Image (tube, rainbow, N blue to C red; front, side, top):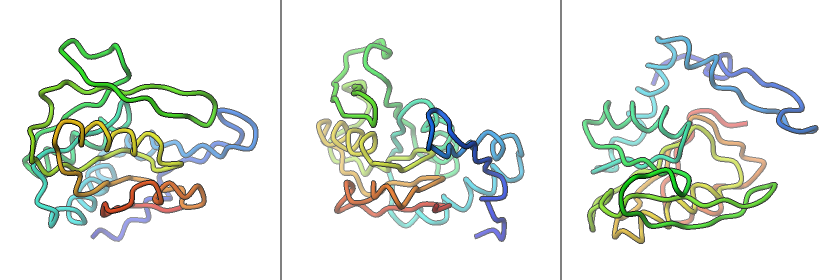
Length: 173
């Protein structure tokens, strides 16, 4: 693991997107190639023992973490998108947000039965998006063996929704 303090590269924006929220902006980390590479490499080292066949990540920031992590591991990447955004035949699942609800979709052929899948995203907050992503993978016959995040907001207890899955977070608030 690197000796970089990744929190130094995450900008905190108060009262965004609404009053009382302290938004964790990862664009300041992503723009520094060496730090971004080190973050992906540290995440790879932490999860490589899981013997992952494929990584799935929810749009959009899950793509920014999941795709380079998949490349670092030499495995494929399966995008999880908002419903209506994928061109092929899909499955869908709905979930509640802090301020409404939404639904996610995956191509029916994105995961093969029995594949060992890691869910990757930039942030674990309440866990709703990730629990829904896990549900989609399991509907396709995949085995969710882990979840990896750049940031975890531990005070929102999202980890509790991911029971039975190894969870790794690079940075915790």
